[in-house]
Length: 274
Image (tube, rainbow, N blue to C red):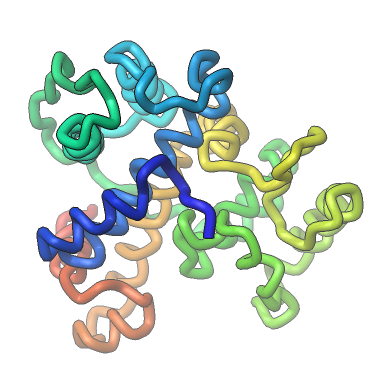
């Protein structure tokens, strides 16, 4: 099976040896997969060489700066991602697989006060899906998150091709017809039944997370709230918890496929939301 980033198998063994929770290991995988996808698409040096031992501080800083400006992540998220990258590059350095520690001179950000989380967007889903000003991929992201799918799931090849949208609520079917008209020519061109496909010829037709953000970011000015899929998913979870306050932790974990160690976090978010 292809590795999502350099030395993934060896690094996963390190994480397993540290007895990390599965959710934490998944966060490392998501960070490093996104980091190297970004480099492949937006970093000329890495695009040309694909050599991790050539990466230097400015390459990591470029990625982190993009997260702050384009995706508008909070400082806490910035610090966690920097920590993930720091652990990874220290691991490579300790094995002699890179002569640099490109995270060495990068500093964490001061802690910010938590911002109110937008969970009302789920209640406005029908109007958002009907808004023709929004790109089809923006509306599709909103729909899939509102169906309970995190972005790591629905961007994975083979996942969306297996969905059964005909069973979804009648209110979303007009948008799904619009989406089919948009995606069918791309599916035919690439001989691929997945839903998030690039609009230009490519060896791999699947849209990456950085590629998806290029559609989401311009639409934020139209909707007036952040369209980061991770933030949308948090809003969806908070909306669910507020609508089902009587459900036990085990029922919520089963319904939303949440790891048990994350339910307390989302309950606190739901209690804090106004």
